[in-house]
Length: 332
Image (tube, rainbow, N blue to C red; front, top):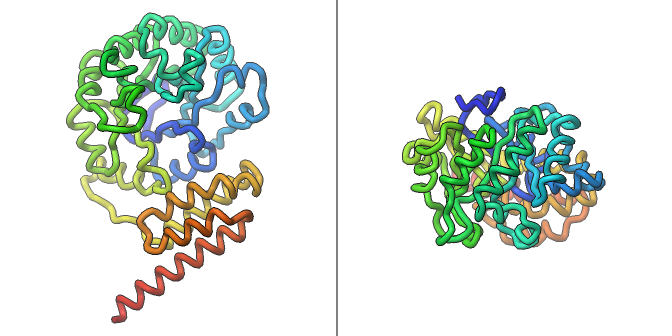
């Protein structure tokens, strides 16, 4: 089992912190499919320090999601420490994670996110300042480097460990790669061999078999799943089952997909109000419908939906159509 500080995870499968996606409604849905740990989307340190209303709402955690890692980002030691202290004392998060991987220019311009990857000394300084200021375990999510010429993954991970960090999650791509190209699992293996704290591998895990291969090839302690879980929490369940039993569970039916999509929608409405939730849910609904026949037309109609009932009716209609066609094929 993976132990991060005093927090013990029940399995090796971790939901990645995805910006604009990993709010409480999504995290809880994924948690119910068996994730050992769920990570919240990154939150600005300055937003926390200034008590920005939108930022404060992002700190909400449902007790059923736990154990949960709450991720903060920032480029200045003072505000990062203040934000970490607020999370430590005023939220029910179990772990405080520091973002060192976000490749987006508006984040790196502020000396935050992936910008840290260029300076192991800054990593040590920032992480140790946070560790000294809080009681919850501190972890770091990082990429393997800034670009092909600046890959300091081993030094950076060692700096995290020296600073008192309790685990590292490593995405096997550089900042320049963004989400393109292939993730370098050799770097993950290299880092694992050079640190003593848990290492969670991330990048190019599309199937349960990929997850097992990542663990086997790199020796890392856990596997982090991001985009493969979008509209597909079954990926989490199927991965946990495959790693624990060697059995590959079947894919969900269209009806199962639609039912979970509507559950997710209702949770998002409870979290954010109907108007905002329905607009946000359009992209999630498209992800849930991936691979479903006739989804192109349905996706266009989804983008016109403005109410919960419109969206739910459309999804149920699609499920009924697919089921009717399937039963015709079976009868034929």
